[in-house]
Image (cartoon, rainbow, N blue to C red; front, side):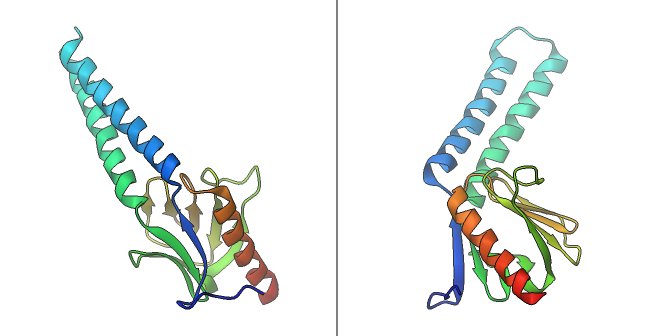
Length: 160
């Protein structure tokens, strides 16, 4: 069986620095290019407003991604949480883990199906929660996500 570290954490997922930087830079470049097009290319006033709005949204999402991926996701005996203290899911509420090729899940990640509904939440590049599903993935290494998903799946198999 898997042994926890001295803090009671069985597995940790941290954003890959290269993927994190790449995603951040892509969003910043997209936002900058859209705003540049709106200001320095001849387009109608309506398109200028649309381009500036889309550019501002891309810049905002880039900053959200940068902040979200600065934390890690931890698996303890009781919960899946991030290092900022936000609980993604309680282990007792997890009904199944979907990590297959055709599963609806984030890139390089997995989806937890819960028995109870949670509040909607989204941390770009790291995780999201909608209804009874929690998706973990994005700019994380697939090996870390697979390891965490396998631990949870083994716990679910032992529970039944």
